[in-house]
Length: 385
Ligand SMILES: Nc1ncnc2c1ncn2[C@@H]1O[C@H](COP(=O)(O)OP(=O)(O)OP(=O)(O)O)[C@@H](O)[C@H]1O
Ligand SMILES: [Mg+2]
Image (tube, rainbow, N blue to C red; front, side, top):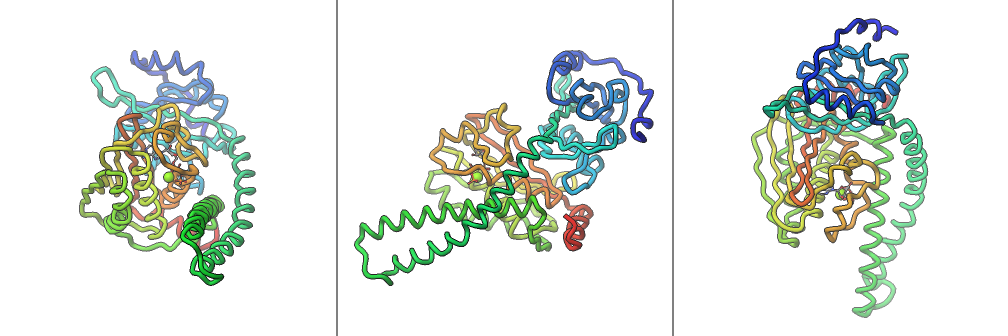
């Protein structure tokens, strides 16, 4: 195989104490893992990485991971140059959840991987490299595909009767079928709010189905993220006020990005509404800024947070963190799956930092460089993805 030949004969570099300790832990783990230095040269490669991707430790060590490991996003765009999660982790000194990524094996096949990267600090606290952890999710993908198929059929079947129920209910509530007592009106308004909840759920299912199957109708245009952030903030002030939360913002002047207005708004709405839902006291801050050729929108809260051991499930359909129970919130665990799907369509990243009892920060990064987005828009126009 071409790639394996390119990388043979790499020398093993002496390990730092932190790496030796990691190596010991690595060898017994079920997840694939490798460590790179700040130049992205591979310094550790565990057994599980070998069995998932096929390359042996001696093939991997010392190689630049960009030449050695080929990761692509779901649409087949190479991540190693401008969208390398390891690079973001090293540069930003933060954990990056890259989500589902295609990894190439030594035999030339493709394996779906769930990837996250974290920076590695040396004894002085400086970033010395990063670790990538990945799991082979072939089975989960198949189960997910079947689940999506069932959900999509159900959602389509439910939409029509729900619309009809709401229509007739509104007629009754308007008195078209005779006058109502206050008690009847109150009961019917409960029915109406539950129909609205069900409709929201069905719409979420349909959105997910469209995002996953590539059938989402995208309307690409120049977007002013500050304008979208202001609209989203405005829509959420009453919700924050009801909970006694401060909703603050700090918006830097930004260049426009290329995206779908309705979908990017949906991302901001989801993140701000989550921040409010999962915060019992304190404040929510929405900030926009420019960061390394990307526009960043950050939603930071002082809420209940998400336990570290549950964080790799963020973005899974129906995932609800155990800490959600500390709030009076309702939810179906679909909002972040949709959010991540939309961000991916825009060649962006979602970075998450969360600590139970302290709060969470969700940071959306959208590229200022149009190339990747334009390729996606073009592929869609051709009916490709
Ligand atoms: N800002 C946050 N702080 C703490 N936990 C959060 C935050 N955002 C999301 N979560 C956790 O992640 C889970 C998934 O979020 P997601 O938005 O996907 O679903 P949801 O809010 O439960 O339901 P919905 O589909 O209505 O959005 C939440 O249930 C919650 O446990
Ligand atoms: Mg939500």
